[in-house]
Each structure stands twice: as C-alpha cells, then as structure tokens.
Length: 125
Image 1 (cartoon, helix red, strand yellow):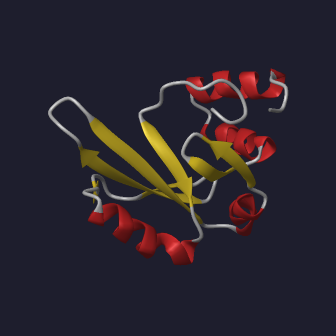
Image 2 (cartoon, rainbow, N blue to C red):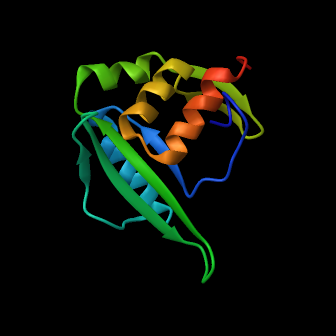
C-alpha cells in the first residue's frame, strides 16, 4: 500500500515468494529470531498458502511476517509482474497495483475494501 497509495500502519509484512524459495526464506527469518507462530493455512479462493512468522522484540513489540506461497500459476504470475521501487532502505520489489487489488479482493476484509478504494482512486506514484 505504501508504494501505491498512502502508508498506513499494519501489523504484518506480506512476502509473496516462489514455492521453491520457501525453505530458504523461512531459514533466513529463523536465523533472525522469527518462528512459525501458527500452523500454515490456505486461502482457498486465492490458492495461497500462508505461513505466519513472529519475532518478539520486547515485552511490548513484536514483528509479524506472512510468507505467502502461491498454489496456482495465476498467483505465481504476480511475482513476475512485480515492480522495482525505491525506499529509504534501498530497492524493493512490490506487486503492481492491479495485482495488489486482485489479492485484496480475494481476501475481502473491511480494511482490504478500504485499501481497494484508495488504490483505485490514487494516481500512480
């Protein structure tokens, strides 16, 4: 959202990765203190398997990273359609606006609906 519209606070970071890269990504996060905090689950309507990893920073702070593993070619294409963007930390790869809207429509929460409205009405950055 921060790259396509206005930044907003979220509880987690979503990372969509190639299925073959899952174990490597999970291993990197585990070396940094993350652990899988729940059993994986599948969003059936979107063919995505979600793995939630948690890192407790201190008594008041924690970091959540959701690793999203595509289970269909349609979702896998989102990775190849991704854009390179600049941040304060350097270059990052982000889903293009159309694909981000597609993912948010698939999840369909109230926050996702609000995000979709912003994305559809926001000029490209």
